[in-house]
Image (cartoon, rainbow, N blue to C red; front, side, top):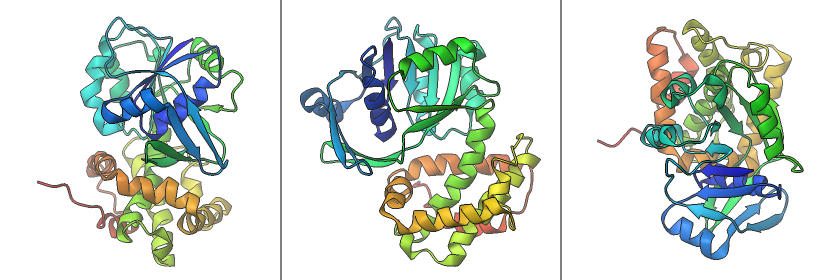
Length: 314
């Protein structure tokens, strides 16, 4: 199977590595500049923190995607704010099946911009964090997986079979979800307060107070309630109940936030990403402020943390 991973950040590199473990795949990675040169000369080097191992994969790289360069699957791992610049390139390409991976508050709009049948466009979120340093990727995860589905409907059987074939023989887990626009918005409802808290303590999450950690979870609950007023069909059992005071799931979330703040893995997955992706968080924040403006919902905990978000220059 010919597969393109469009984007060579932490997400794209980890994904390309996983896909390369299936020897039936021919994986191509779109990278640019010095990073492309490093991969071409030394291979794609990833230090897997939790697994205590380093891998090196040799794979083909490109720096541009031509309309007639057709793949069986295209995984797009660009940040959501970068997509407007690359969507015309992707739309012009002859490949049929595209998966947009990462935090994206505009899944329905991206699907429409691609001008393809809805069952040819998927959205996913991959469970790893990390950073790039010293000509290698530092990747952290407790078991690599992706939640994936259509923007507002389940994936077709043909799409699922193609994905299953791509990951055959790997330890990569796919979890299917029927409404990824809703899933991604609810996920961002938690991601943004975590990022705000990171900015409050200059990326040193162990310095967060108990009150700030409580505000993270309270803010996520406020945001889920806001999304419902904005017309997003929030799945309360999987989202709101995780943040609602007095529930068993809320206690579990409180413990997870404490763990994020106190462990090295939390630093890599949360604070490192927030501190190195300020532009992405500003883009997500703008999208949610636009949604909130439609509702006039009061979000006290959200606002208490949001004031730490760095302001855009200019």
